[in-house]
Length: 115
Ligand code: FES
Image (cartoon, rainbow, N blue to C red; front, top):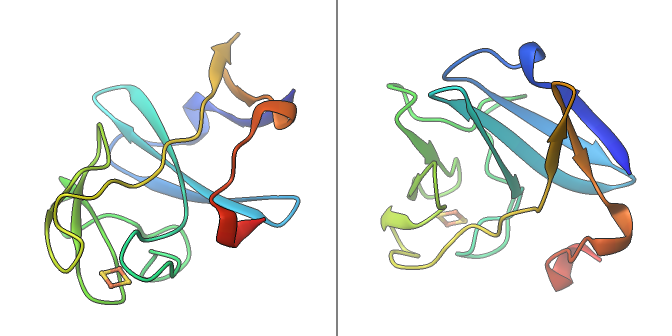
């Protein structure tokens, strides 16, 4: 298991880019819940962030791709608007234990283009 972060290290309404052995993910904290996705837009596969650790729109209400502006729901990764409308960001499975977010590297299923 890999300890990704302490949930208290991520402030409410913010996002964080993560590089785990050259596998790129990002975490978002919303309403005290943590969401974890592969950092790959379902449109053409580019990383999403505007700048380091900035994955959200101006209101921190949606995830926004910096390449063509697609907007995604934070809780399920569904694209609401943009060129990949109706597609989803891919979630990364994790567990929370003792206030920390863990992923099981043996069970990671990275999108093909990231492997
Ligand atoms: S690459 Fe994300 S919207 Fe086009």
